[in-house]
Image (cartoon, rainbow, N blue to C red):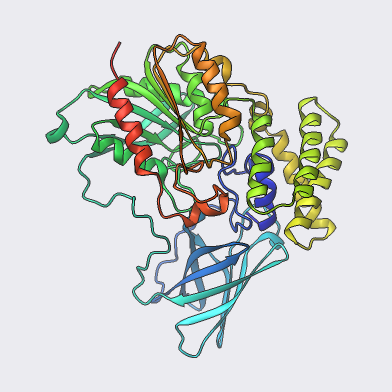
Length: 500
């Protein structure tokens, strides 16, 4: 994703061309990669390679990466890793080395060359350090690199990622979902500690955008950490790659929130067929928390529901509040916030009422220009038109058209299961004061036998301990999922996961 596209995606719930998250999972002020081309395998016969660890200086934060440069026959090649953006072994092009000058480019499929990140680096006299810049979309970002002589240096510290051997079982599974298949991992508690079951089990439902089974985001793997915790506390968990993502088949780009709900229903059927599985529940994060009530309402196979940062009002209301909160946390002036809100309201009103394309494009252009100007980015008409058109296509996508008006409250009011709803007080994407009261009202009117709604102090949208809740903190925080929040979830499940 280009620096500008990252800013625009905040307004419209993620880049639905190949997306990033509902209520969008985070957009940095500069993000290099929006989506990846089909990855090639490194050419056989490559000569010994060099691995460099680098840092791109972004406004208010940094972005770590690693490049491997190798000699292949009579040319140079290489690969790029950006853990904070989920990019692994992305194939580089135009790799060159002339004296102390090293250059390389990463092609982003579907975008013009001006949007491709291009590095130009100068290696110092030691041969072990380099300095230069990343150029993308007309914006320059200072960059430094150092030679990784071990070839194994970590780019990011993620201490909660489980290390093998694991004290529980992992089974690779495939869920039949009619015309496509969902590839996933079923974690089962240790037999020696918890017996052969049946175990309480959960299906983990990701947030918006094409997510893998671990909900990988900015180098974090929340669902990997969550399933690890649950297995250690006697709870089985099924997590799977979204349709069209990872090892799953199907087309993600044409699917809507309710289509993803159908995938969850198929996962419920799959779990119900496993002998070691007892009461089945749902854990939905962000858009997953929107999906869960649609699956659970009227479904006797679901026996408990956990909502993590779940929206409780229609999508256009979520996006309006979210956009302002995120921009304010990043230092936007009150004047800019008011102008942005006015333009965004105009866009949403036109879209919701089937407004004329030319009018929507005109309002989008004003909105994009405001954001670019605020970011201090230089642009020409060609670049502006590209961003406006992409934003328009996002607004017209099947997912966005449905998400804008989808209201979870009627489904929440139909739930017959025990419900746990958690939100962080520093969540700037699904704000507490907008959503928690509505969840309480809906559940209070529901036939649910019991529900617990809790505000977790100091946690952000990803349930990390945060300082401001700003999206720019997400990748910099080492904790993937607050341990207290994890314990709250597992203890509640073990108390309420009782077969009917």
